[in-house]
Image (cartoon, rainbow, N blue to C red; front, side):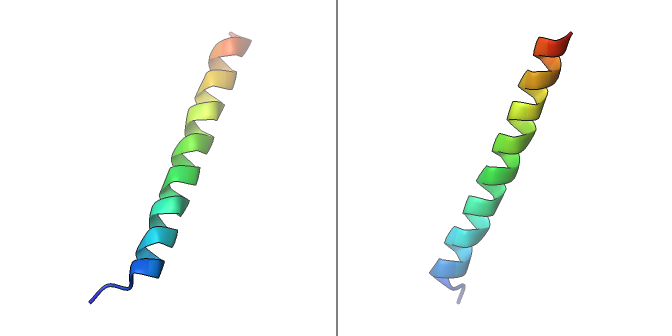
Length: 32
């Protein structure tokens, strides 16, 4: 059985990574 606490941490990490990639993309678009 998957630990719910670990699952939530994993989801939060994925969200943070996606947010970083999203903001990096916005910054590069503004520079152009």
